[in-house]
Image 1: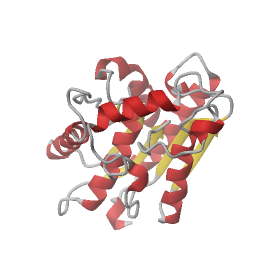
Image 2 (image 1 turned 90 degrees about the vertical axis):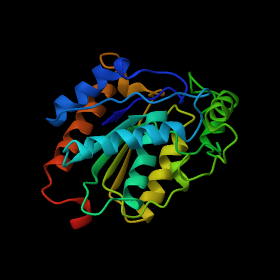
Image 3 (image 1 turned 30 degrees about the vertical axis):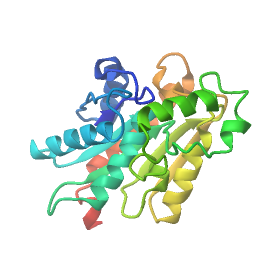
Length: 235
């Protein structure tokens, strides 16, 4: 299941079929890219509820093993969905076997130091722009709500997670701190920081060598997760 980015305010599933298909081909699996309702017309928690409904629908349709992938805001939703699936799992129901996220937004309170330290390097976002986008999505909700900002969630009992982020991103600390917290909670988590890479680099297939490498690494990791014969709960 691939959840697309767009700072919660833009993007369509069709536009992300190429990257989702690339990863799925590498992982040797099928993929599903859902649409979800966008802010500001549909503020938090609408997008979270939409992707959760898609996840539950895939399980109800017979999917036994699901891995979740997302980029940017989609990475936020992917990680939020992981925590929801872990804390609100249905009895004897399938749970995610792993996740990969690219440049995820994990802290809508925007407290990461990289908003300052990477301000000149980042070609896409400033902290002021991020603050406006976050307000449009939150619609007055608390930015440290654990469903809105996965950094503040309980990360215990999550499946293996891989995070890819560019070293030139103001969102760098969103990835760093999430992985640090996941490791402290006993999660099999790993962070790959790609030097000189901007936000969303992994999705630019053919533009950066790092893009192909990150996607291939992700596909191989997901293939291993999906190959497992035991659910995360049974491991």
